[in-house]
Image (cartoon, rainbow, N blue to C red; front, side):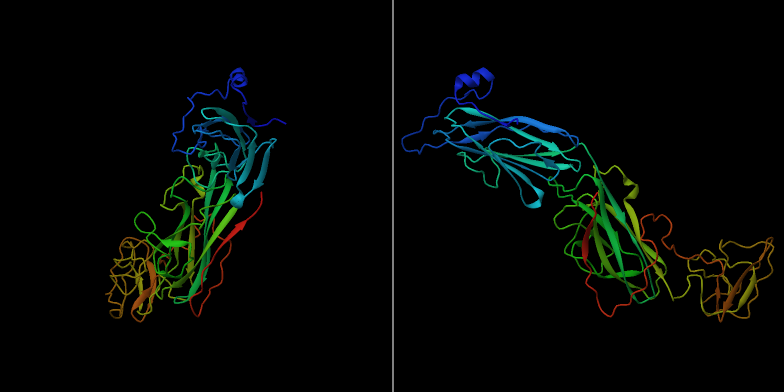
Length: 427
């Protein structure tokens, strides 16, 4: 088995193989100073390995101190998208928290003041590799390194030549005006790379716009209100827009993060929907995501049992030309007791609009249609029922990621604590 650890015990041997040649004059300790080794590690070159590729580069350990380093413990740590391709003699391998892989290697050599030894850092990129980091080195005197970084223990950040696909998933529910419903927005990582950005605070996140006409009454703890260009504070109900992100900033391959909101439907609400967008905590599309087609989904609320958007409750009957206000989104006419057709324009060849009295909603008698087919609208006790009134969007258009089927309306007696849960399926 090939060992990644190579050292020189003598200057002659080092010169013969071209490594470990002392390049520094031997420091001299002053009488009042305590002699001690002071080890320094050279830096590794950065790289963007493709999944499956092996990274193998030497580093040099130099003793800049005034005493020999009689024993050197060299440590390598790899984030979860990297692994050791083989196990070298003299090294102990383990897996730490957060899937960090570690090799702890004992270099059986003495590093004299001014001398250097060379060892290798060797790892491979796994299929899920993306944003990775490598820690390598030793303590200042050759002991097991601590958790900080410095001249003897370094960190290399690298980005694998790969991608990850963040996707948004929405929801569809029904509810009556004044009731409360629960909707779930989902952020999913379709891979192939796992996601955690340790080099920036612009972490992966899900932007959630609350459907218009509803109010968020319970919000997941991992969802913060979003202001002009970023989060504005701790989680709390009542805002129109939220940004949701995992507490540990990590989304593994094939993992879904669900964020459940409790919404109260307004008493005058119509069918409505809010937008859900996968991206970053600042609303930026990540460079590693090459598939923006699935970034957007919707939270749709179908309002049931309320007043039809094209219906009013008073008026007589009008037959003939349309009123002048046929484009009103609620299907009401400003020009007559009869309401308009779908186009809201003046009809042609119609009969005169007929009205017994001014309707209670404030309209006056309909205008006379000319040169076109008649449009018929019925009214009751004042304002008309628009047979061609336009309903608000149900959310079925442009919503490829909505949950299939409608969820029954939920009327809750009090606030329900919304939760976030992770779901993961193995590839």
